[in-house]
Length: 66
Image (cartoon, rainbow, N blue to C red; front, side, top):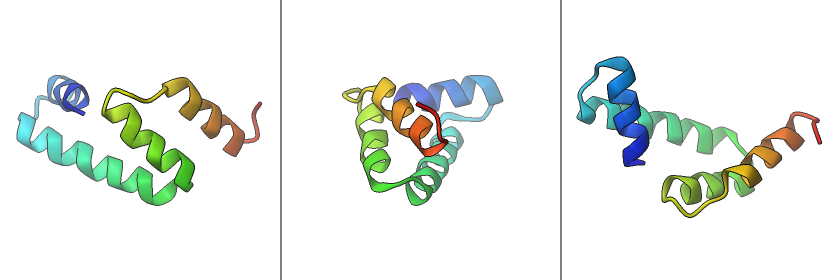
């Protein structure tokens, strides 16, 4: 998550504290809206252990893509 916070800070000019709050809000929103299997994958990706490819496949399935 630190990498994402730094990216938001760099791209927006916000402080790292504000960027962290913004990232936390977005993550909470995504977790509330996505099905449970993707919710847990978000945590895994943010901790550096997840597979983005698997999460993207899940999103594609939700959108009717194979």
